[in-house]
Picture 1 (cartoon, rainbow, N blue to C red):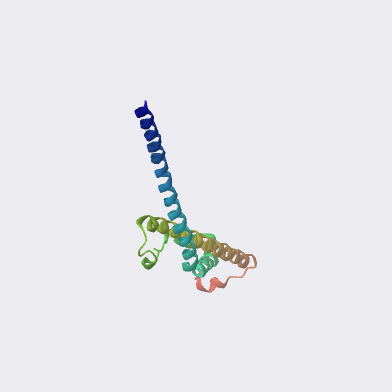
Picture 2 (tube, rainbow, N blue to C red):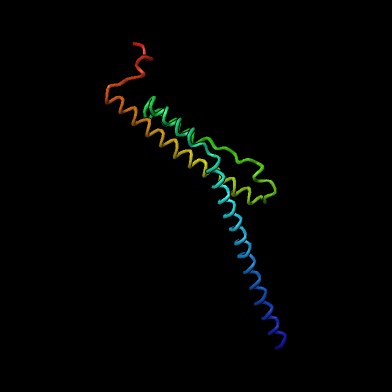
Length: 143
């Protein structure tokens, strides 16, 4: 009887340890993911050149309405800069993976928003010039 009670106590102890370890590892992984995502988003906001994407969308939007402006939006979607390697030195592989994914996603989002704003503003200028019958580009078009 004593042996059966000891056996059952050890089984319960082992089950408790087995169930606790994965939860602890998962909590550590979530902490790494959260830290990497936070760092990546702050760094992406510092690194992105929103003025460039706003100007690209605005210039192409003014030159050819939404059709040419969509080239800027497509470029903002396709172009994904890689985070600088010095930020990732000495970090774990999990951190690097989470950081890189979050960095690229945030950069893409910021570039898309800036290019879309530029395209909409440029298209508005394009249509306003057309409505006022002002055609500054007609000097370049030969008949």
